[in-house]
Length: 160
Image (tube, rainbow, N blue to C red; front, side):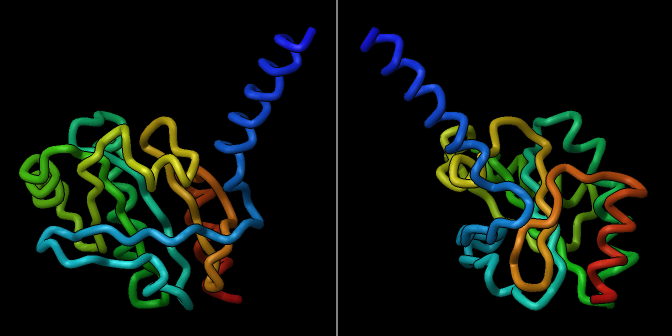
């Protein structure tokens, strides 16, 4: 009986650890290097609506989603919207090449630890692409919103 209880307790702890970043919770800090090895902090974007976008150059679905994110960024960048791209590429050269190929102009940081990324773990990211929409206070509003739904959420948040 103790063995079953202990296993259940471990399972529930693991679920709550990955589920901790739900809408309504404050976004944890991210401090990682950009393409020029300067540390960029997510908190530097406080006061703006931010899409935190976890991706990698080798991830086909991520690369397929990048044009939509770029389009959204271009539509709202002058109105208080930012994208904070978080790559889990272990090879900086591949990451930088993908940024250029996909014409990404918004903030990009990289955790070369790849799938062992402490940032991804803290955010509960266990698959990519994964995105979190933050309001101007840094509170998570939505997880993995896309297309027209994401556009409407961003527009609504910018009006507040």
